[in-house]
Image 1 (cartoon, rainbow, N blue to C red):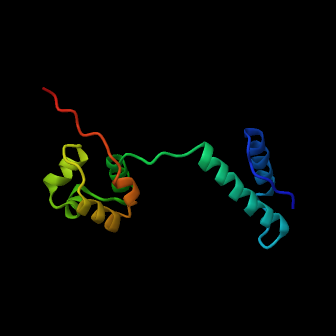
Image 2 (cartoon, one colour):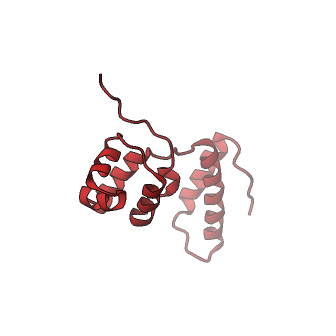
Length: 125
């Protein structure tokens, strides 16, 4: 097996073509092993050159609510009460550490997402 680091965009494109060629390789074969190693190299290159930013905490909460069928009443149980849930979703109140813990535990939202800073609602004068 001839492997080398992926350093350039050309190396990356060539590795992707090889991954595509090997995509249907049967498990426990040299081709599948090659695919596994290439995917690791590609992932490393992508993490360095095409990082994916974490989503906004409030948008993440809204997404998890939608994806898991969580209602405002359900969210209220994790955040204390309905008023607090509405304030958090409308960015009028920031998440507390206890809220972050509850959302992580109950909805499975990664704490890494929830602890990020985010913009509060703009108050109109």
